[in-house]
Image (cartoon, rainbow, N blue to C red):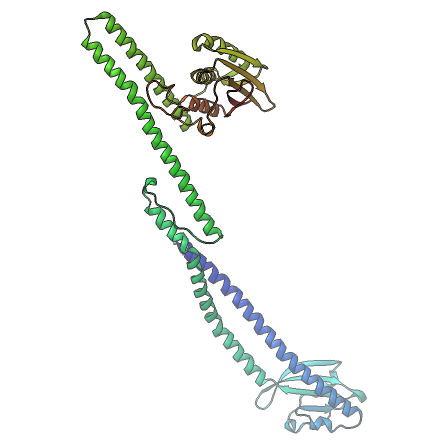
Length: 442
């Protein structure tokens, strides 16, 4: 059976009430003990002063001082009562045996007959072997102590109740923003509604939580917009080659009798089919990398040898001069993926109008860098930060004659990330154009 409240507010209130009750009860007990001790100390101080006065007078020969004290008796060494206060005419404070056995000074409690009046008594020996007993009634103190106990007993639950109500108000005020945040967050059904979480003023933990959640929603909103833009761009890019392919096939069917025309149209259709296939493969590669399922066939590779072989293959195809320099560097990587990475980078330079490309392999203690530099116009200043985003091109046109779908550098980043590396872009030396550096872990 669950006894603790289910809500955080209830648990906080229960913990506060229990803790406050224990602390308050301990404080009240300590207060009661201290007050009782103070009362006893006051009685002892009064007894000490009276005993001192009577003993001093008796030493000087004035034994009648004991009779003038409110409650005092003076005894001889053998226990005989010499003189006492009138209220004690028929009552002895000390018995004969107690007088004879008394050594030093003592404070005792006693009940006096016949009514059992409680007294607090100080006994001591004075000169000439005499014994002096001085007493004070403790009934008033007992009554005061009893009343104090009842007052504290009745005050404890009242104070606990007041503190619990105050704690409830404080907890409710403190957790009120959390309830509002929860209600608003539950009402948000889609990130494109433009809804925002309520602002919590201040600099406490709740306000920081609200700002953190709002920042999280902003990041999710940006991610949602990017995904929506990705779908729109993918649809746009796929629509073009599909439409061209359909048109070429329809023309081929209409001119089935003209073999040359059919051959030309089917060739154009095959080109568009290849373009559509490449685009589909690129989208699939990006989707797998984003899902973390991009498969790599890792093996030890010398990046310098790989770059030289890829440069020889790409130079006649792309029509650019490709130079390779650097040091041998062996990494555990997928050869096909890295060939695709280099081909995309060199092809991107060729599409931008570069006539020369330089591949540089640099080895560092913990990573290897593949740097691809060209002598082209470089990246526009406002394009460097977004160069690796999907469907982004320096030329924003989306026509069929554009350089590509804008996925080449995105694929480069995905391949580098799949190998645990990173990529960055800049403009400048060694050739004065665009420079892209791919960093792979050793």
